[in-house]
Image (cartoon, rainbow, N blue to C red; front, top):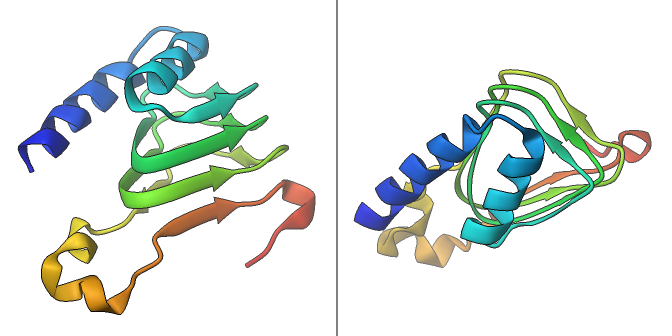
Length: 114
């Protein structure tokens, strides 16, 4: 749990960096996220297990937090102040048999699947 708190602090600091390019660089370098040709808005927090973000725009003050995999495809646009959360409790030993598939997939806007 201590490690998760440190990662949260780092994600908060990345979120307030002055440019999207710097935020993208730091998320790639420090968290290993696969981010290409995308814009990440100011104060957006990405704290997930794995992220693949391709040719999209994420607005300001969004939160992606939890033990989840994140896939955002080409042409997607996420506005401001959205929150995507997955409870950390899903990783607890007592819930392992439930096999939660914590995947957030946002397809390109012309391929919306809901």
